[in-house]
Length: 358
Image 1 (tube, rainbow, N blue to C red):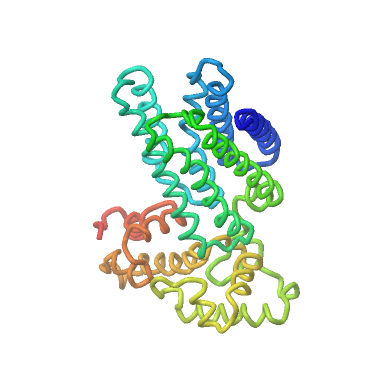
Image 2: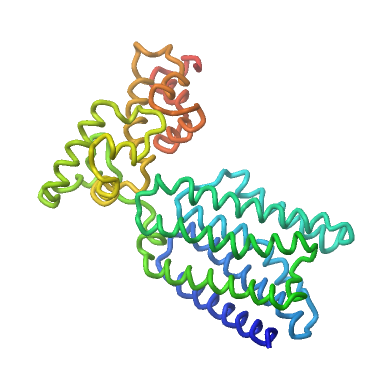
């Protein structure tokens, strides 16, 4: 009875994966999301088919489906990070799939009896799940998009339960794609995969323009006006006008230089509920992350300091610390994202190639 129910759930999950794949890839999705989403769904289908074969007596695991399934944690991680607009470092982005592919070749053909590749695949997968959990929850307070904040809350819990649970089970038992040896565990894995697919379908399809299509809103400059002219004062409610004036006054006083400033802390200083400030910065000023909002002010002042002859000998690290950054790397990344160059190169461009690096 359990085996039949397991097969039924797996077939339904495969169909749901295929339907979601067709619907989303045929829509106006951001290009950066299409590949990881396709890899996520194809990998899930591969895992379902790979383990279904053993249940119904077919030879397995199947090489192609087994190979596709090992990338499911990676594509889940990459898809979620890009929905969160958190681009991973290039070394991790390209190095992880290469490591997984090499580990699979070792496990399948080179040293299958030593299980080295098996352990590498599962440990890497668990690390990706842990990193997704960390980014989704720890950076949730920085996210200004309400739909995405909900996505951050529930997706990592489902992924940790489904992908993390399967990887941990297989790692403990020492059997890859072998949950079908335990009918109850196999059924639980299939149900969790189906739950993730249904959650993704309901959440993403309902909020597709916000999460999947729009990559960025019109950015605001350091005075709070968007590139398209900013929010029309007539479109703001009286309370929004007052709050916007308070916000601009606080920014003019340099509150953005406060180290570790959060939107909750800023709301408290302005004497307003956090959700009202979050809505103003996101929906009226066009920012999707609070750190991006602060960086517009911080980088604007950094550019002025770097181009100022009176501060030509001021170290870049000092500028970064004075502007509220806890260390130099986050400042360098924010500055490069805003200007396309490093702070030191920007200073050299302002004064000529002959100026030495600080």
